[in-house]
Each structure stands twice: as structure tokens, then as C-alpha cells.
Amino acid sequence: MIELLIAVVILLALSIWMYNRLIQDRNQVQAAWSDIDVQLMRRHDLVPQLVSTVKAYSSYEKATMEAVTELRSRSEAAAHLPEATHLPERARLEAEMESGIRRLIVLAEDYPDLKADSNFRQLQSELTAIEDHIQYARRFYNGSVRVYNTRIQSFPHLLIAVPFRFEPAEFFEVDNSSERAAPKVELR
Image (cartoon, rainbow, N blue to C red; front, side, top):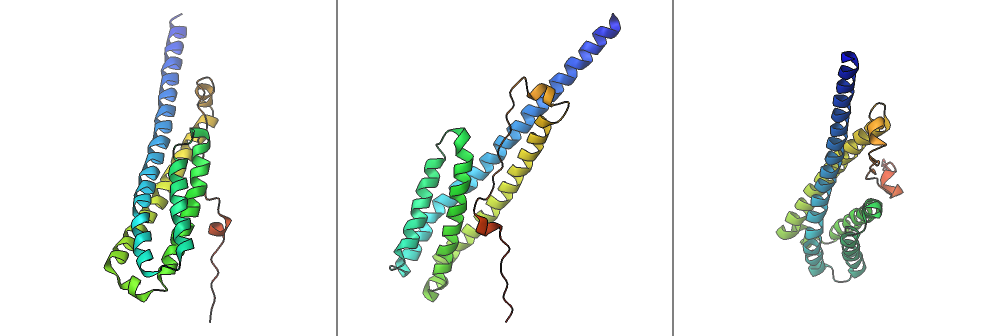
């Protein structure tokens, strides 16, 4: 009888430990997404300043600036979508935003006075730092998702994950196939 009681206590303790570990993993995924969100908001706050600085030098490149501004608005709206559609839509829009910002920076290369402008250089430097932080936050988030998803799909944790309805998290993936392609290098 005492052996059965000990076995039940050990099984209960192990179940509690596994449940708490799954909760920690899920919270880690949510915290990692929050880190991405903070960096994306920093980027969104910087874009209008960058656009207005570039506008002062390049009034005829209106289409690129309007596209970046529109992407920023759509991305902010996607942040308020239901959780199930939030991440895939936000990831797609952020990939487009990143591409638009690159076009804006390339556009600035055509204006030597703009490249020399200290405000533009500061904004460009901040944007580069933010993009680096976003890349780090994405890697951290995807690593957290990988650990969490592996745990809820692996024995013995799945014995706890299934009855308590732990759902797999989605990776933050780049949908833009041009960003996955290897860069072309031309030797002259």
C-alpha cells in the first residue's frame, strides 16, 4: 500500500513539474514575441521621421515613401488582429516593410546632400540598429517556439500538453522568397 502511495506522489510531482515547465516555455514564447513587438514599434516610430527627412530631398520619389507609410499603417492595424491571424499577417507585413525601408535607403543613395545630412545619418544608424535587434529578437522567438513546440509534442510532456490543450506556437517566418534567395555576386 505504501509503495502505491509513493508512486502516486511521485507521478503527481512529475506531472506538476512537467505542467509548470510547459507554462514556463509558453511564457517564454510570449515574452519573446513581446520583444519583437517592441522593436517593431521602435521601427514604426522611426519610419515617419525617415520619410519626412527623405521627402525634403526627393519630392519626386513620392510613390516609394507612400508605400512605406501605407505598410506602416497596415502593420500597426495587423497588431490588433485576433491572435490566430495576428502573427502570420504581421510577419508578412513586416517583411514587406523591411523591403520598403531598404528601397527608401537605396533611394537616399541618389541624393549626396541627403547622405551628408546628419539627421538622416542618425536616423539611418538607428534604423540599422533596430533592424539588428529585430533579427536577434526573431531568432530568440523562433528558438523559444522550437523548444516549446518540441516539448508539447514529445513524450512524456505530451501527456500533460494534450489534456491541458497547449497549442503549438507559430514561427516568425519570412514569406518574401527574395529574402531567402542567396545574393548574387558579380565579379568584374
